[in-house]
Amino acid sequence: MRTAIDTNVLSELVSGTSGAEQAARALGGAQHVGALVICGAVYAELRASPWFRGVSVDDYLRQRYIDIDYECGADVWRLAAESFVGYTVRRRMSSGGEAKRFLADYFIGAHAQVRADRLLTFDKERYSAAFPNLRMEP
Image 1: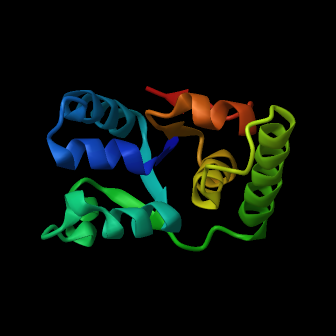
Image 2 (image 1 turned 120 degrees about the vertical axis):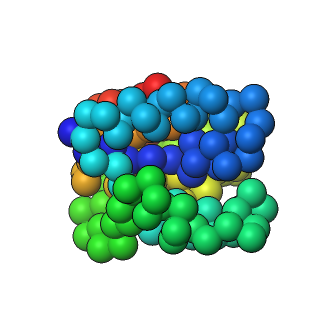
């Protein structure tokens, strides 16, 4: 079982906030059943995160046996684009106005759907409409 990890799980863990314990349990459970991976977009978000200032993201990931998938392939990019377009259409049709989510979120979901067996995230609602077939934890 290969688990893709969303940025929010790792950020919670590093931040030490109230969700850190839940993030640690979820990450440990995922690691117990298989490999852990993040896509390049998650890596970039971690590098830009204030929670990772003064922390080597590469060392942090290596110590937790989390691989980085930089080579995602055209199928991931296509699915991310299609899912993002679907989101923008749903948003406009619901009178919600212009898109408020970032394309990176859809790339993370597409990567998990195509290159992993599930996504470890605290934003299930965000991903469920765009990726209804994506298995999500916790």
